[in-house]
Image: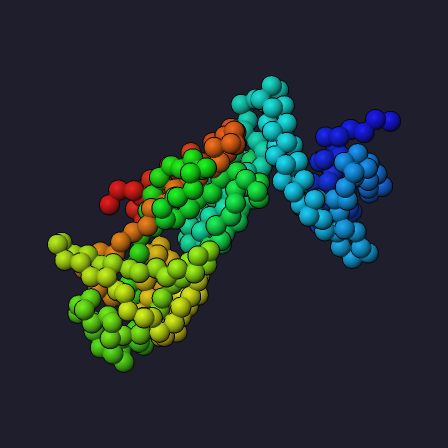
Length: 306
C-alpha cells in the first residue's frame, strides 16, 4: 500500500506535540501500531531518523525538529484549504502559534482569551510567553507581539499599542527612606535594573514632565531579566523599580506597591504585531491579529493613544 504522506506527517507532528505514540494514537483515533508504521515509513522515505525512541519518552532528532516546523505549516495550510472550500468555509479554524513578551501575555492577552475562544472556537492557540526573541521562520511561529523597536527587515510589522511604565516601590522601602520628591533624588536610592535577556543590554528609563527630562543612568543595586522577578523584588522592599504599568496595577490595588513620582511621565515602549514577509497570512492568523489589535486599541493601559 502506498504511503499516505500527509497522514504520516500528521501522525509525526502529533507525536511531537503530545510526546508519545500512545497519546498521538488516542488523539487521532488510530491504533498505536498504525502511527508507528506511518512514521517508520516516513523515515524510510526521507532517509533520515526523525525520532529518538526509548521506553520512557519520545523526542525529535535535529532533523526531526526541523522537519516538524515545515510539516506543521503544510498540515495547517491543507486544513485551511479544505475548510475554505467546504460548506463550513466561513468558519475560521486551525492552529495559530504566537510568541509574546511575558507582561503582554500575562497582564493583557490571557485575561481576555475567553472572549477570543467564544468568537473563534475552531482556532487553536499555541502561546509562548517569554523575554526571548524567537526566530519566527526557524521555529515555525505564525506571528509575535513584540515590545520595542522592530529592527528585523525580514518581518512585516504593525504598531498596535504601547507598553506604559511607572516607577514604584513598596511602602516598607519608602518608610525607611522617606518620600521622593524629585527624579534628582533617584540616584541616591536602591534601583532595581532590567536587562534584556536576548542582548544583556540594560534598559535606561527616562522621566519627563513638560519641558523637563531626567534619565536614570546610575548603576542599579540589582539586575533582573524578567519583569515579574523585578516586581517581586520591589514588593520585597529591595528598591525602586520601573515596571509595566499593567503589571504594577494589581500590586497598587493590594497596597504592596505605591507609585513614585506619579506626576512624571515615563517613556513608553511601542508594541507591534510582526510576522515573516515570506509567510502567507492565513485567515486564522489574520483573525487573531485583528482581534488583538482591536483589543489593545480599546485598553487605556495599552492603546496607542494617550
